[in-house]
Amino acid sequence: MLERWITALRTEDAGDESPAATRERLRDLFPRNATRRMTQLGIVLGSTLQPLRPRENDTVVYASTHAETLALEGYLDSFPNPSPTLFQTSIHPSSVQQNLIQLQQPVRELLPLTGGDDLPALALQAALLAPTARTLLCGGEERGGWLLEQGHASDRTFAFTLVLSTDATDAIGRVSLEPAASDAPFRPLPLAAFFDHLHHRRPCDLLVSPGRRLVLNWST
Image (cartoon, rainbow, N blue to C red):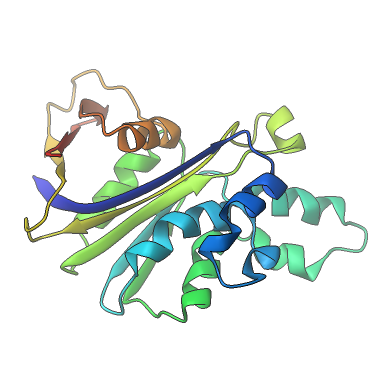
């Protein structure tokens, strides 16, 4: 069994809010004029990640299926004269990198992960196997435009950051991946559904993949 204590949690549920509205609402959380150069996902993720202050000896695991959807749309729309700036911000781990660079904060390991409905289980496995005493598991999505119409983007904007520790001091919850019968029926847990469990602090006990049970409990 893999387990860690949850010692801090921050979430941001922006729903179908426009990038401009998100930027205006959250701009005071960042240095002056910083949000003008950030993606919507970078802003919502930063509002959860930056207050928890990543440290040099931390592991940061980042999970997103679609990542910088709007920057990717803008980059593709810029052809035949592709924008280098949009290309740079469209890469998968861009949102977490925007914030670590802004903080000027190195970390021991940065593990960006993508995937489908099994992404939360994969990201949790990586976080729970991290060799560091403190691991930050963060992730999120931004609502797409024309890629959403094609079924290749999230229909909502959200972000979260969990601090996972080997020390139970000040714990607000516990998360574990436990073995289960490999032939037992399972139900994959998409990233948005995992976010809802975190955002509303709902307990969870689900078979999320063959042979793996996700258990999430809250103490406060």
